[in-house]
Length: 422
Ligand code: HEC
Ligand code: HEC
Image 1: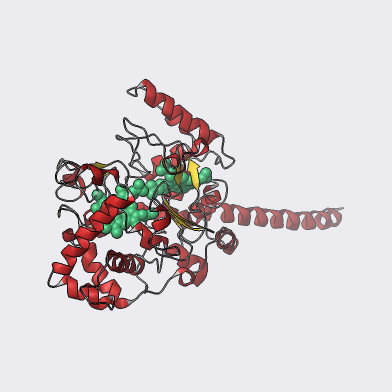
Image 2: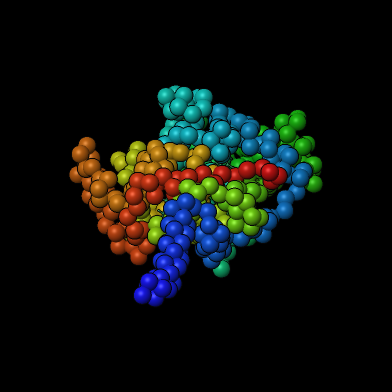
């Protein structure tokens, strides 16, 4: 009897042991992180969402143009009133943004918060970072996509006199020079017709700036030489080409820890891995934040509260609608790339979010985050219309716990652009 019992019990015991073993393994895999299976799942999901090795999206630049472009990027001579440069708002310290909710242009002083208090002209949008803006396929620039490459060439406010039909960055760098409040003072010295920001007034500003450069005994010959023309033959396009070459080279994304993980066997911590799996999984972030720079470059209405005066005034920014006048584009903005995003706060087109945690909460559960007190009737109508558009989307993410949100933030930190060599 005893023997019989023993023999039938021991196979049972082994089965139980094996089962316990399997569940312990599963627990280990799901809680402690970096099983090869989970790592492989994240690599596969990233590649499926269009992440490619960074070498594949680089575009070569001319070192002479890059060198002089670096000088121009810092030069206040290139602002109509001589008091701002590109680097006034695109600062290394803030990963090529400025650390402010809305940019402060002409008439401002200092950097960061000091600039905010200096009483300069406010540009009613959050400064965008420049990482990857010169890479292959980066066809849509600015929050509202006012520069966009299509099959029929580049669409911009230059209409048929667009400076290039195949390099959106080259067209984009033409704009800051003629933006009132950004690099042109609104009231003093700017005649009525310059205020229109149309093609003719832009041409007038370009010719003033070009002449200034021609007359500068150092910059004139240097830019002419880099562009292989005489100083007399210098045109604004040579200045723009130099600045574009500098941005393309200096802000090219050569390395991030995440790309290293996907393509070169680099490591992520358990929390970063967890965050990545949520980003590409139930968070549904990758339905819009796709590709190597984590943007589909398309337009979506998001439930982010508008802050500040707004592009359309009195706390309103119609976003993409300002470019297309198509009502289905109301409140839509281009999905921002997420390279170095952990360093470019505050976030969103109006700089209304001061932590990445809040950005994610607002993506997930906008109604719970909404507080209409202190908003005017017009603003409340606007806010609710924006929320309604978002709730309409197919891409609504699943709710995430506080811990899951923290993991996603850790994952976003792996996207910081680093130097080419580890
Ligand atoms: C007063 C601050 C300010 C100055 C000066 C400035 N920028 Fe910007 N930059 C911004 C803001 C704000 C945006 C976003 C504007 C928008 O999309 O409506 C931006 C966006 C851009 C973009 C588009 C990036 C993208 O993701 O599409 C490029 C390119 C750019 N700036 C280049 C330049 C260059 C080149 C200069 C100098 C000629 C310059 N900027 C000067 C504030 C500034
Ligand atoms: C339906 C498309 C869509 C989905 C899904 C989505 N985003 Fe976004 N995201 C956007 C757009 C569009 C903006 C900019 C909107 C604005 O400024 O008004 C944005 C802004 C952001 C920003 C701020 C970036 C900056 O430079 O200001 C972060 C960070 C971000 N998203 C992360 C995420 C994460 C994490 C998820 C997943 C939980 C996610 N997004 C899901 C479209 C999307």
